[in-house]
Image (cartoon, rainbow, N blue to C red; front, side):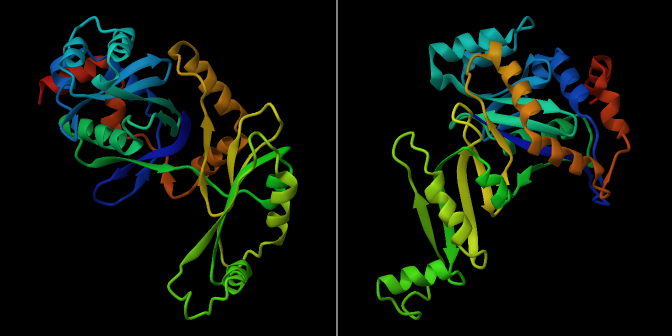
Length: 309
């Protein structure tokens, strides 16, 4: 699974001011709040959506139409393991994503058919609406990064790479002339994608290095390099031209080891650490706490808030 990282903030509805605050206590209290009837109110594309605790700051984000799963989730002694057992019996029952929430950002990992991060954002805002918070919106942004040529060239292993050039790039015109095309004939062509594909498990660093050094920056829409620092490491995507989302690859599907692997990836991701620090120090964000959210750090407050609605 690919673990994509996103920052989050609270946007005031009227003045559009953005507040950044730690949402971990809010999500923990929501999951600890025992009210199955309330939690069965949330839908996405006509499917029930649930957020279940799967460890410290780790959550299972599940969407399903299965009456068997819905019935189980309504039970007061629900354990996440019960959901896993049901999913194992019939994968069509539902699909789940994993969310690791940290201070000011979260990591989101999902398989192809699982709910995506946009569904999670909608889910949180639906919670706000349901409990009467109508002046703030939960807003997220993918954490983006553009690497330098020097960073790419320091990698010990380079694999499949993609280069996108438009008509302002010399490579575009070389390709046009190679097939005898005129400028007019190629006027409706937006760009060329050049894919450099290695043989199985082969390191093509020396070949890709030529492209990195020789392809002009002018008219270069994208240069994506799949690389790793050492032969035994994990492949990562480096965007030398065009920004790519900061992410890690999670290999395990076993929830018992998932938490520790995510923590390890986060600690080792220097780019993530740098980007989160930039986000925290960005002056356009206010760090004042939003009282209507901090009030819901207690399960008791959830009881009184929902009962008053």
